[in-house]
Amino acid sequence: MRCLLVGVWLLLAPLVSSSASAQDAPQPTVLSALGAIQHACRDSEDAGPRRLYAVDVPRFSFVRYDAAAGKLEIDMRRNLRIFGGAAELFPSDLEAIAFTAGADRATELRRVASEGAKLRLGFFLSFDEPSRHACLIRPAAGVTTVRIDLAFVELLSTDGSVLARDDTDRLRSWADDAEQDGVPGQGPRGVLGSASLSGNGQLPEAWQTGIANASVGPLARDLSRCMAAAVTRGADNAADVVLRLTLDGETGQVEESEVELSSLGDDEGAACVARVVKARLRLHPSRGAGRVTLSVPVRLRGE
Image 1: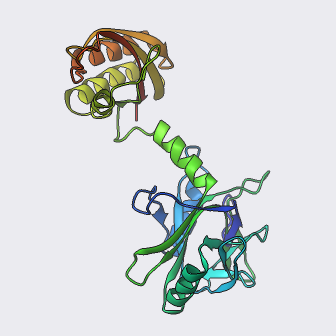
Image 2: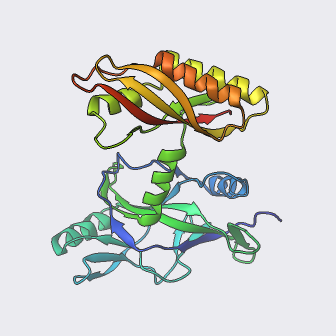
């Protein structure tokens, strides 16, 4: 059986207070039924980027408050169960799941927990090498166990608002990778990445904003055509092209656009990308900027 199902093993990283609001954080797929966990387990066998999931734990309690560490710990003396006991959350290395809080805050979190607040755990599916099963089943108990890497822990009020949240370094690392690799949309497409200014100096904020906002409209449509044609010629479905742009800072117009690096595997497609950026990219004029050279990455996806 390729994917055996049953409870949740947590390979936990130390919890760190999140500096960003929950609204700004990457949004997980919330698994609200046993079948959803089973589906996620099957999906995990496919190659590709890691997916962020979350489950809600309706029944839990806090134990001690560690004043020295400023941590309010979840009671893990018994396994956390979800979906009416059909699945278990079990930290395999017995590390603590906790919220960072001062003494007064810890008292408040205990109070809202006693009034029905829910615990939400965010995670990535992990594997028990070398068999590489993310999910395991205990037939005698009929309980689903899923091996996960913890990403975050939240306390949710009865109306669903976030009362407390702690993120792991694992989540921040994943979010950084997703920001670097993600290209919104479907089908052949491209997006401009963060530009850098050759030599000394800092890129004007208006130019940074202009480049970030450029991957829509005519420029985006033309990049998609470049990528679609390249794929038909056998180019890679995921590639990066780095352009060297010579810009007239006084007018914001691109005077030259050259391919500096390309992983596309199609010279014609890379040249097409360079032509599109030269024709379509216009930046805000910067008085006194003169003639400048920028390095601009273009992320391309074919499907």
